[in-house]
Image 1 (cartoon, one colour):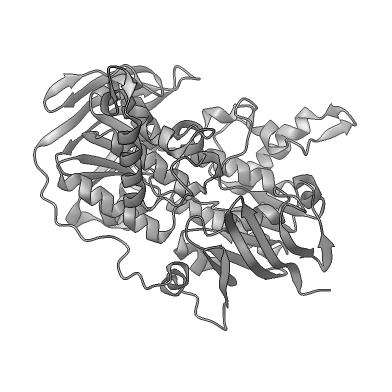
Image 2 (cartoon, rainbow, N blue to C red):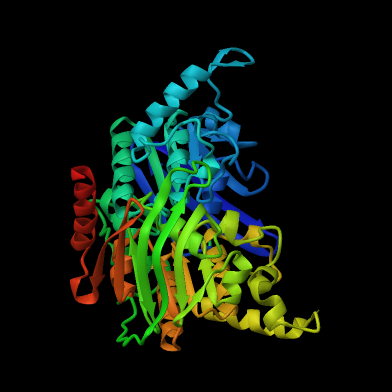
Length: 518
């Protein structure tokens, strides 16, 4: 049997005048966990889309061999017949179907042709969720749209597991997960390896690559720079970063010495109920504050309520039966819509850039200026397009957004560059309070540093920033204070000199223990 389950030879792919892949070669050994690393827009996802049949044969140059056989996939079904399954970076589910229906969509459990066995569908869906973990309390009959992005990602993993794939491609599988859930997923990947499943994983979380990968291929500017193999080459975070960005990155987080001012934003006794289950209280008596020129972090496990809290504060964008008080600069405010929140100087960068953050069928310029078009770029209801273009071009340079022009369609961009456009959109609205929900999800280490630097620049001008992140190391590196949320309640508050991952987890565990005792 061929030791190499996959060989991709001389792969070249262009989008118009832009060459996304240039003569790329990739070889993957059977039973390995093979990582692919590179900056945003380097071509990683494009290469995997060719392998999985998203880009059909004839749409690219080069050859794909699976188990020594030349493959010319016309679509995803062709690749799945060969035992290849892919979990995309962007969620690809039907939001109005149930969890069980999504898990088996296109792979239905049938009694006989044309008739679905719904009992077996539900049973097997529960089994798949148990394998993934962290979804034990969710009903498989619940619509996917009722889940947060992190849990939707876990449903994607469960859907791939039921296809009995021999080659599993995971494109940023842990991007929306916190550290504990990421470790759980990595353990699942390691157990799949023991069962003989070969995995290709794309991830910007280099500590995960260092922990599980047998080999690492680095792609830069559409070219395969090198492949490192464990036991032969050095596989370390610094070594991978050097290959990705072409230089050594000394510090992951820019240094800062901030002295926050007075409290400018305060929330008291905030309560939020679930929009689908009106008697289920998701946020319980939450109180917190943010000072001028301060970065405040929110840590917690997946499902703790961080995103629900942020969205409810942003013009009641999520939840029902909301009670509590909100103050800005000592004045009580009550934004009842997203427009009200923006008018009050509050901005929210969503964790779901594809569903809620961007209009994919429009341009970078159109998306970036949307929240501030009337206030900043128009006079007497007439848009100053020259000012709009100059401002977006300047922001594009600051954020290092990789694109052909600011008139490029959002849907044609990589996930990381889409995330930068979402950030640009809110920067141009010039908010006083900026809430960033998973701001570096799916972004490479170089781009993360640029965003952290921009956060420092914002708070240096007196802005206040709230950061919600599943990466505890990120919170420790950029924040001045951290609130820990557990099951919809504030479980603890940590000052800078108290920061550690252990302290965060201790707050969570103590809160869970108190709840059980009560």
